Image (cartoon, rainbow, N blue to C red; front, side, top):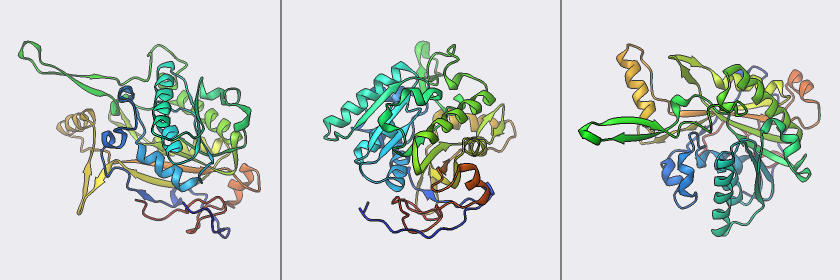
Length: 332
């Protein structure tokens, strides 16, 4: 990324979420395993909802400069943190489950052993208490938040096969974030409480963001008893309620772009679910992308006023004053 930047002229961003500019991110040209090989410790595999490294890296490259601070308030195995320090940024994460905190620290140490010694740390705690958890030096200094809310075990998990007694039995493992009885984990509470909790987290993130800072959230629709839950639109509402301005709604591919089509990389359980639903007469398709919702913290006015006027700088094609690429282009 060049050190200089081109100031973009102010333009209006549509307040109608259906009119948000869109970019397509080609983030699955190599498999998830290939993206993590040699860069993440084997214990990382067990996490049920790992962010694709290329998705985190793309957001970091396009919305920050080297040396700036990247935050993930629900960092899991530390994908955002690892990708940030590999790209020369500083990184801080918060994670609720002690086991994943340990895995994140191991992944950060692994990155340092590869020669990436930028500032990176993880704090154990509930992201809804972000203001109490983050060291004071990060307040107002975060350039980018990259995160994803927990959702739907139907899209998570690893395959186990039991072939004892000559019987093939497929079962599912590693599809929970932690103890199912722990209601402090957002993954274990009801859908509406999840949205309320995520709004609290985004509100706390807004307070530590610098003016003009970005928030990128990876999320996908998911099905509950065959009914589609439009979680991306609900997340846009959460961000707006937290005082953030939606500026883009992008597509991060989970399928490889081939010469004439997309090559899906769905998990066994996703494919099995689709097959069963089609057998039952419901013509579902394998999910080949995640939505990436991009918000921005207002620069020169309060967030509510900025939303009302739609006066946000974030739709220009050139890099803006913070070095970020504007929306509306294919991103490899």
